Image (cartoon, rainbow, N blue to C red; front, side, top):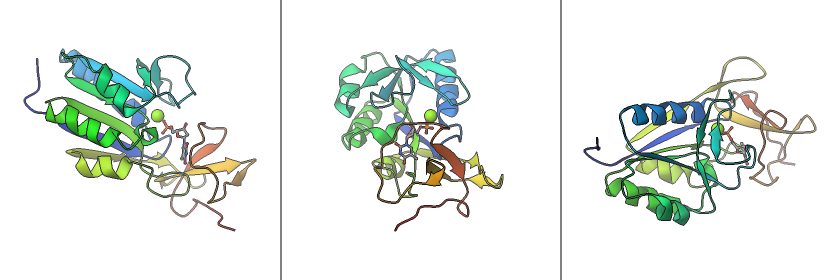
Length: 190
Ligand code: TMP
Ligand code: MG
């Protein structure tokens, strides 16, 4: 079975919103439809050693860790029809053209990534991917403070909100991050 046309789908949202779970769900369904699926993730994501994408809830799927967007293009097999990419926010700007190229060739490309960094600013290439995608899904987590829907990710350093000028990239999970709503998301600037 092959697709009738390529497309790009983006799954975005804060941490703990279920992005990787949704990516895994779509890729499993593609496999049931006898698509040839390949999954990639940036090498930077050291949380899960080895070759898997893993959701916070513990679901996993085999994935190839790659150092750059160019490595994805070089690693896609000729008979692959669906490409999944997790942690898309960590990739270099070349990913935007790579994803377009794959979709132009007729592949379905599904990306999951953080729309916002801990400061609440758009994360890297995510806005460019979202603008070009045929379909964008924005997922929400639950605010750790009030229980409302959360659209932001709070970084905590020794229990206190991280400063606006802290480095953007810091791999981690529950020990440093929690989901927060707009009202309870705090980013001290001085
Ligand atoms: P997740 O979206 O699958 O939960 O993973 C997000 C990863 O991104 C996690 O390793 C923490 C990292 N991260 C940053 O490096 N900078 C940030 O500003 C935020 C919010 C997360
Ligand atoms: Mg994830």
